[in-house]
Length: 155
Image (cartoon, rainbow, N blue to C red; front, side, top):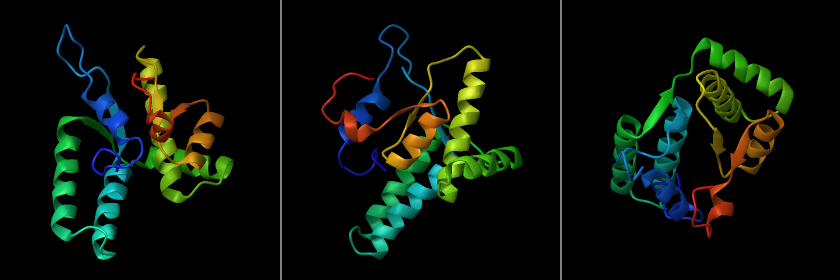
């Protein structure tokens, strides 16, 4: 949501996403999201429209922007049976809401994949305090964009 709606932490997150390697002129960071993130974000836009805090045209434009970013910026992890099973394990250990279990399972899967391929470091970016706490207990470094609102660097 923070990439598409101005709120606390938005400027920092937008700078992070826009950061490019000055020599190679490629994105400096890789962003991995779960398919669940796409659904949650689009649903939040439309929920705002139904509650009259945003009109439907703005919601549609925001969702279109999200869909472009899914193609151009984000690497999307699909909700597979293996990811769902990992989310069930996370649910038993951490007692999170269902989508948050899938989010954390996606982060665990991504971290494992990146470590195995020698790429890193990996950070979970989330403004959800409970999800961040659970991620830290699972050995994932989490960063809350709200805490970085006045921070000029990447991390």
